[in-house]
Image (cartoon, rainbow, N blue to C red):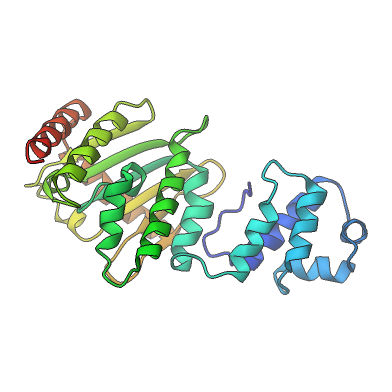
Length: 278
């Protein structure tokens, strides 16, 4: 809902920025809003600047007063502050603030089928591969990944441009049946009007793409932002030099990729090969 999607903003700052935005949208001063919420004007001021964290009853009062389409909007922002998110801070900011607001997403994955296109069983096999994860953590992660995919079915869904390494069709994740189902789903998604899938040949000479996967998010009211994976940690940034670097890698990879029609036939063929192994 916010126009300010700066990935460096803390959860408390985000809450404060949204509170100020909604207050000003209704033409209220901090004192008048404080009267409505039955708190002190200084509390409203401190929360808006991010210098004081809101409590649950304050967030609930905001949701009741502003009556936004998302009935728990401020409660959700409150939870971002007071609860441990499922994942590092950079990743949570991407999932909650960048990805859902993207107009276009361009993604490259040298190892796996991208999360937005994964089946439940494929995602479950990926998360079970993290040997330190408990079964309950795995199921929580799978549910969160399935929830993310809803952005592709909404009315204003983003355009999704997907580059996948050819070996991603051959690498066994979860076994033959899981792979057959995953690639069948991938073929189905690839013909949607807002999804374009291209396979990058296994002998692709562009070694830049082997360094990491990444996603480029184009936003209508904020700078283009990238999410870059690495073995140790990830990074979300709108910094111009990094965005330009990732754009360059994407362009080089796409120049080597098969056309969408050719890629779709490769996906269907790989799905049939996995099916014959079940």
